[in-house]
Image 1: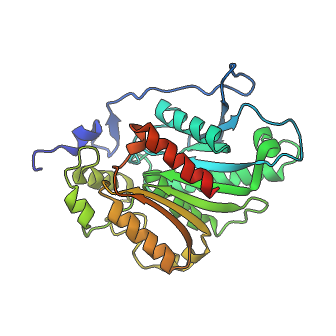
Image 2: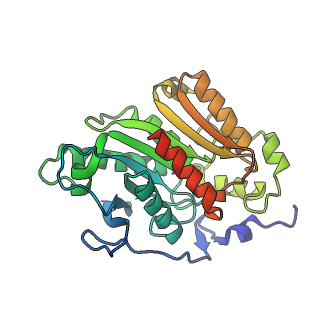
Image 3: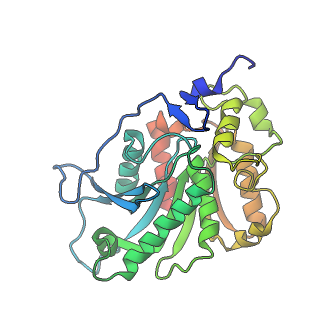
Length: 320
């Protein structure tokens, strides 16, 4: 592994100022817009600025076929979606992320609020957690504003059934942001659950699955280490609590207030031992946990296996 170049694997060049140049230009898809959808189009979407100064924004999704002001029809859960990308790649406009949100919105069904958080290393942790708190507080504010509140949320969203859903690094963001949100006044919004799909956690001590899968073709250990170097605050290591949730600290006293959690993982993921250890910690702390682990599969399998993608959507559908 001595000749392996994690930067080349990630298609980035590290610059002298600590930023990176991203060599891949991922395909993007525009939102449909508020009124525009084609026949047979199951989902409509639109973009909303969250914080101009921080350049954060959101893409909202809703099913195109919705009852018109029929109070007898149950409103839809609101899912705050935190995308994958190893802290450094993708936007909610990236086609791969956009299509995932379309599917989530259509199949659950739900109102999806996909957050375009600041990427590392230009934005170090905990800025991604702060961006997520901003997004959740924005949703709360729509519930409170009866005149100018966002129509899709006010008319079709159930503010008492809001979920944080993160994939890979997004799973890490969902967990840590959920802890931060415990200190915020969210009423009438309610975080009804946290969904962690193959969450990205780490630590200085190697686990058996990390050692066994150190040369994994998609997610090798040197790449995981570099991603943590990009994301963690300067001067910290992989035993910082942003990376390693098993570390002791005052935040551990808040974990039992998290409510329900769904954790999804696959046996061929180098992170699987950490994910299972994390589940055991949640259970020990008194959290209601649903764990869905499959021995077969690898990190990010849903990107290339539509059957697994559908299975994950079903897990989410059952949970919400």
